[in-house]
Amino acid sequence: YLYAEFLFNDGNGTETDLKKAFSIFEKLSEKNHTEAQISFARCLLGGKGCNKDADKGYHIVSFFADKGNNRAQYYLAFCYLKGTGVVKNPEYGVSLLTKTAQQGYVLAQYSLGNCFSCGKCIEQDYQKTVEWYTKAAEQGSARSQANLGLCYYNGKGIEQDYHKAVECFTKAAEQGNADAQYYLGVCYKNGKGLEQDYYKAEEWYSKAADQGQIDAQYSLT
Image (cartoon, rainbow, N blue to C red; front, side, top):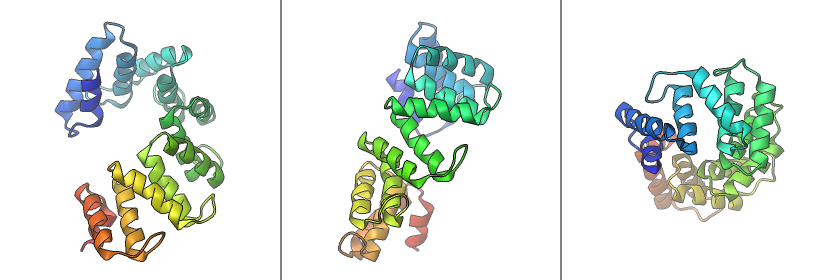
């Protein structure tokens, strides 16, 4: 199962990897492996490594969500938010996402922060954005750490604090988050929250650029 998750999430993204991951999930699902069944449903919902079957994917995640599985609740929330395999119901989707986030599921916390930040399906609220990014960041979510750093850097939803921004960017950058690596480069270049250092700025820009971060690539030209 873990090997299949690696192929799905951390492989080189080729269709072959996704198909192999799906095949493993499918076989384990037949043996009633709960997490594999949910991953199998995730593939069906998005057509990742297989022919899309949103109805079947929805019914699987709904079944496990009813049993209290946080990961299934998370995917079910997005079924309702996007209208995948079920009639679109953003309000109910957000309520499910909130419930899952309150139960400590880090992906739900990160996604809820995004919802409040964008004002999508929910009223925009930067303070709530910071609240949920913080919860996810404390659990080690690199994307949340990067986004929280931006909140501190821009003073959105919280008092502007370049030192805190650098702290967040550094945690995420060291985990390999390309956006955080770019933002950390910006901080070094502008001397925001730390001593100005063009060499360090270029170093972090390069790390981000190597991962395809467009702003970093542009900054190196």
